Image (tube, rainbow, N blue to C red; front, side, top):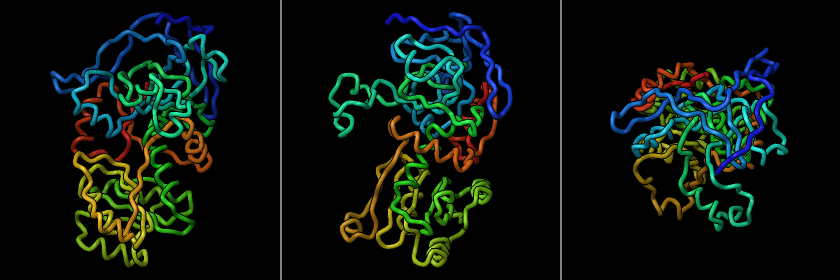
Length: 359
């Protein structure tokens, strides 16, 4: 599809957000950009030059400011994808297709964005979770084919949101999967102020008024959660009595457990730490199907729910909450050339913070 675009008036857009003066270097016409792509033949990330894409109908060209690595990227790698990695990003509107000129955005705007393409989520079919339209059926294909570990990326207008001034675009990328997903998970865990929330694999909850106990097998990760305000932490690998100690601390078990880990053991352990009638929130995606007792469910021992980054219409509540409470992602800044090492570290379970690249 051919596209007419609104070009930046100048090659450099001058912005002055709260973090200080920032210069955004423009893409001067067509050219190439650096991108971190998974090569299924070499089984590693290759940094290569690829063409700068052009926005088509309903799209922006985004100058990426930050991109971060997510466990879902590892899942894409395991499918032997051969494309640019990354679905967590934030940046600046660089170009706009003429069809989105009056949608409330302008060149130079600071934005975050979701990564699912192909559906506006506006029709009745989507609202009742029964996709009817041909465009909507593309949702079933999942993530975008080319991601955000590149200097530029194409993003659908309806997936974008203006970043509040209190959120730094250079560290905002993890919000647009991990952060929003964590918010939805905690927000829908059926808790009230003062209830105990167990977080398996890290997460948020203190800002909502809950008591938080964090569980992980990595002491360094647990130290990070303590700094974020967790009331208690347990290493479920080294502390053989953690279930009993947690139940004593919480007077019978946590009211809800949000499992962000994709390990089978994380889920089997989560059911043990719930109080009667508690909620297990499924977030991490293990390779194997969950092993659940139908009898336990029938007897009401626990309930199972799930959440995800979800649709664009839900992200504003999450972003506004994170901005209001000044909740910032814990990040480790890396270079694009380090992307393969980042993938290796995440696969080996050595990442304690969100690994992020600035462009």
